[in-house]
Amino acid sequence: MRHRIRAAALMTQGDSILLVCHKTPETGSLWWIPPGGKLESFDQTIFDCARREVFEETGLSATCSRIAYIRECRDLKLGVQHLELFLVADSYTGEITLAHQPPTEPDADMIQESRWVTRAELPSLLVYPEILQQDFWDDLATGFPETKYLGSHDFNSI
Image (cartoon, rainbow, N blue to C red; front, side, top):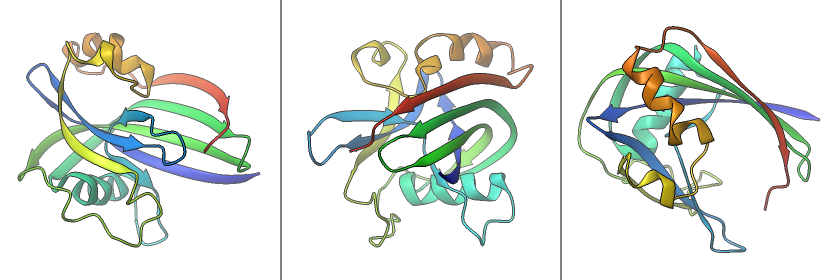
């Protein structure tokens, strides 16, 4: 089984969280996740990775300082074990745009939009990780006092 590290940023604005909408090509289903992506060989840290991915997927420049959540998942179809690190964004600047998404990225065609999603909208969307639906807001209110392990699950990719 191959391994993949993904770093993503948790960015909020009032009662909204910044999410990226992906579309599964085969089924047309939509799902939302915090901006982030694969740790590349040129990324010196997970924080560098998150900063780069946030810019590519949203056009925003973000600064992250600590890990809020860790999640593992195994793609049984592709034989990849993912380690996902969700980082707290302390600040950000810029305007949301998809213009910085590299066209050569494998998932470039899957990304539909990036936008601020209100807490009230979340229950009507397929959002990962699931903690973003409720407990995330409690953790945000208390300043993410500890890193939480969100568990491990298996799935079959497209």
